[in-house]
Image (cartoon, rainbow, N blue to C red; front, side, top):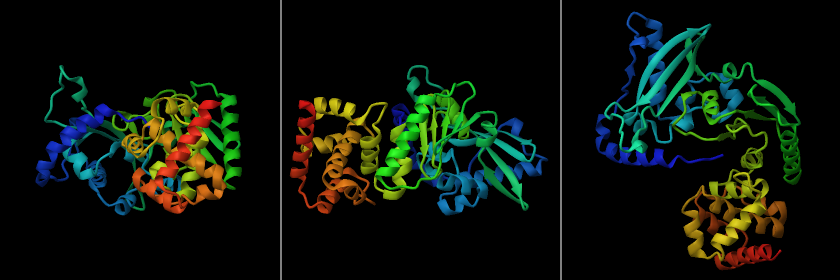
Length: 381
């Protein structure tokens, strides 16, 4: 469910390199559309000031204080559902390039809705290199409520799924776009997968929310985007909130279910986390064994050089499969207790490799030899 928009990163890399020379001009700049004029509207001005201060806040702990407590209790550290999709760079970098352009503010019952585009006003659309057209970078719509005479931000998730279908299946609470027919086969498969993995790791897991959207745009809309470009994806997993949002109508995604179940107990770095999720749950709609077929064909034999080449692209299918091969070896040799020893492994693959070798008293060449033997045995079957 992690799809990187390389053209976005291309644009931002160029843009932010230029921006780095202009950091001295950084301030809480924003623009108001004429329809969002706050002149004579004190309450609207207060809402805008509150929202802009939040956007520019760098400190995580301070930023959390802006948010409604019920959202924090419900979604944990993922309380701001839109945030990580928008802020792929620190606020002082992103907002110095894409300025907040507040399009409208309106009161719906007791909730203010504030709609904001993130724009760079120095560039006109390019008709020869469309890949550079990134305006607007996103358009968000967030709720602002007043409680005990204080403002708080709130997700519009419940409002936007109010008429969606709610189905409970085992430990999964499905929220389904009413235009999609529930797929009971996939739902049962997901439930069985959770039960099996919970048994393997001796987990007493809480319920999981699984949101099924028809399109990625619907996904973006539910998490707070009226225009979904920044962080665009076909699916998103919120580990702390124990929630999966599918943007392609899927009712079962073992890879992401594995993340939700296992990541909190291991808290390992990205390399191991993705390896565990791929070993038990596959990746990109393929099982671990199906991924091995491609991996053997394209990357055998594994050496220090091929390890570094593969892991240079941390979120690539090959990197996921390589990590899964290591998990395969550890799991079959040391059982689940061996996998649990990978708790709090380093994030970077090279550091993680060294950590594994120390933990299991094996040198890198011998580990590569075991990986190659596993691949040969698989190819011969």
